[in-house]
Image (cartoon, rainbow, N blue to C red):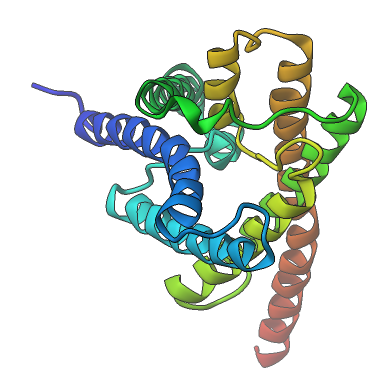
Length: 247
């Protein structure tokens, strides 16, 4: 007899691998579509607008896949808060299984793309010093995690509305960081490209693309919990006083 919850965990792992594989493939494929299929010039204003529109559409597709799979994701930062706020078994599952699977999916996707399309390049590159890069990735990650938390827990609305706001903000932040670090905000995706270049264990990669985003994610979650907890307590107290008066 299979343990309770086994199939669900297996489905999540499969979804994480497939989505991570597809995500690292989607970005270069979108650029190739805009430049080679549509015939637009790279870095031309019109082509940049079309690329942004395609990126937003792509994010909608992956958001739908996440819902369809019951929580699958291509980004370790999306499950990090659950790992540290849940029980020990959940912590082990996320750090021991989900995040490694996401990394493996990204590495597999990059290897597939390089073999199939050797001209695609080698992914995001650090264009500034290590401290500037870490600060950039940290701030970008802090911003998008905060936005995601607010959208998921504080702002009511449909799946379309929340995904639209989140996607537009992600694209905006990626553009802001593109000339510095690539504006990745996804350690697994960067790991795939870094592994292809043989620099996945370098200090720059680990510090900028892993340590800084992870710390920023934890900080954003802690601050969000701190800010949203205070009004909740105040409301509870007010409700209690109202009940006493009514009695």
